[in-house]
Length: 157
Image 1 (cartoon, rainbow, N blue to C red):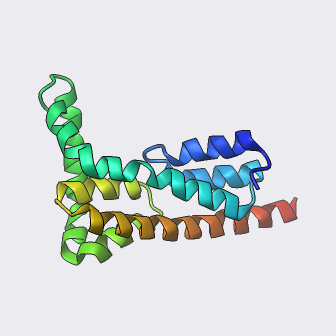
Image 2 (spheres, rainbow, N blue to C red):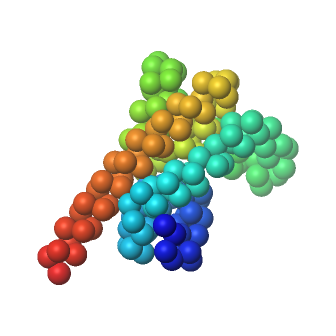
């Protein structure tokens, strides 16, 4: 396990980046030649690390940003983006949040899911396990596509 520490570390760091998250980190880890379960584990952990911090502090940070001249526009944009995606989550509660995080599409994921959950005042004990389940599912979907499809391409070459 952890045969190439640099590739493992790069993959872990990529999995913590907003927007890219686990959805981009797993294909990178696959490209580095990391074994599936190693890549899956580090990407899930890396993707989930920021979630409790977002759930606890995002409302405070956005309120603070609104008091600063050029950051206020960014704060409003972030809130608008979260509210745009929140309709399905409000309607279906935990299942909506799970589906939002689990479906590996651009603009969805743990970061946005945590932002929406925080802005909707979902409790940490409800939001965190739901987001974690979504990340686990998304990781399996992306891993299956990455490792299955990319290995198939290697076979052709």
